[in-house]
Image 1 (cartoon, helix red, strand yellow):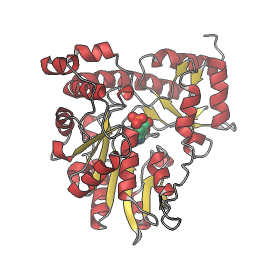
Image 2: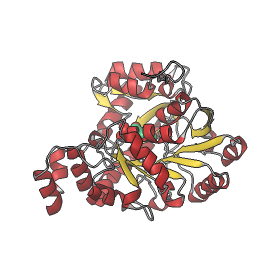
Image 3: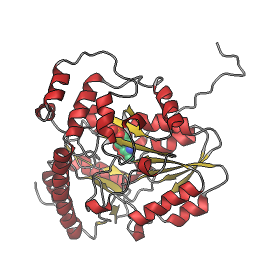
Amino acid sequence: MLSARKRVVLLELKQFKLERYFAKYEFSAKHLMSSSDCEPLALSYLLSLADTECRSLWQNLKLGYTYSDGHPLLRNEVAKLYEVTAPSDILTAVPEEGIFIALNCLLKKDDHVICTFPGYQSLYQLAENLGCEVSYWMPEEENGWKFNLDFLTQNIRPNTRLIITNFPHNPTGAMPDREDYARIQEIINRHKLWHFSDEMYRLMEYAPNTRLPAACDQSSRAISLGGLSKSFGLPGLRSGWLACRDKDMLSKMAGYKDYTTICGSATDEILSIIALRNKNTIVSDQMKQLNRNLKLLEGFMDRHKTNFSWVKPKAGSVCFPRLNKATSCMDFCHQILEKTGIMLLPSEVYDYGQSHFRIGFGRANFPEVLQAFENCLTGNPS
Ligand SMILES: Cc1ncc(COP(=O)(O)O)c(C=O)c1O
């Protein structure tokens, strides 16, 4: 037993507002129009893509414990997404678990952290819970949701340890251009800081030549978070990874994982290998759907300028329009849900005022759901 002096105080985690909102409505709402993942793939379809090796791995799979750092073939496929990052630089984890592991390994009390905001709550909440002071780097809406680099330079302190970014950005769909991103990395490196780069929406750029280099390829003091939940439409696999070329940090994170899940799910690993070996087919199909849906959304936003203003996303499956009405977005989203069964996501769950809401446009039925939303706004019977 620990002595009173040594007793570890486990801080209570604040409620994860977005996840609680999804828990409440995701499976009761008739239509989803705020999800950040693309159309989920059917297991039978994924298996139909398996090559001979994967088919044999699947058919002969024994459901024992798996490699704690991830199946070697999986880490091999993940490493192909990067330029210099090698299979030995990869630790597999559920994406959300990856954030938990990395921030716990990177941070200690009284460290200062700069994190893009609004954002996926665990990215900054866990830092706060560890006793760190967090500065919130907010994009300028009037400037196309641009993250101004001056904020970064002006807010670095002697005790700044870590910069957390999420590009492409949830919920705005913002992404710096390559020049700005190179400057961000130059600032991080000049100050010898760590970079945690949440790249869950990478591969979903509308102009492929705007894709940013992965942070783990650019610096050994960077950790990239990747996964199959968004661009591949496989959130149910719970498959992701941390990529980091600093061996000490990677080993620390591997040790931390012994206290979370120990190892991945045996079935999910094989399915993830199949998905990654078919990346081009899967991601390009999802992008075709996203492009079609984004075009429809553009037309919709043009027709409803009095109700909404928006910035067209540069990448990803979500955007964050402003509601040009006196009502709070929480009320607006509840009204829409009640009238149409459509689930939207209010900015209140991001602790970002009450004027915005998130639209997710990655699903196959988006055209019909958008039409039902429009019918409700215009008073047309559906
Ligand atoms: C930016 C970002 N990071 C991490 C995650 C966590 O991914 P997962 O739900 O697959 O664990 C999400 C999920 O929405 C996300 O949007």
